[in-house]
Length: 92
Image (cartoon, rainbow, N blue to C red; front, side, top):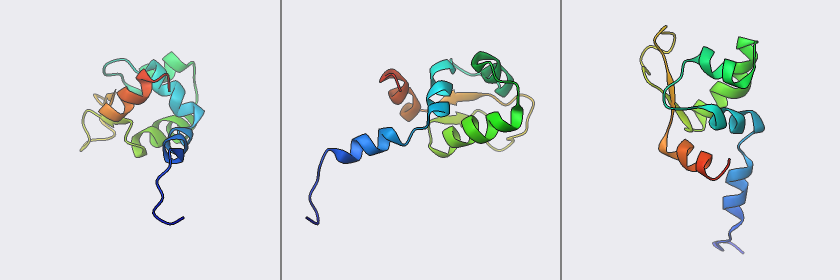
């Protein structure tokens, strides 16, 4: 069955978005700081937030930094990418 195209790939891609990332997409409005996102999610532990929410969303291309060349800037904000907006509209 090599070369056969099925609709399964779409479900697999959507299924790869972990619940923490889905939650992040649900609260991210316009441009928000890490702290604002954490507060909106009700999370206190920064390291857990970065590992389970922020990094996976960045790596999946669902969110982006407003200042990508300065990831640790105090003015850093995060926003949805086109891919992230599309997934958020689908109800993640």
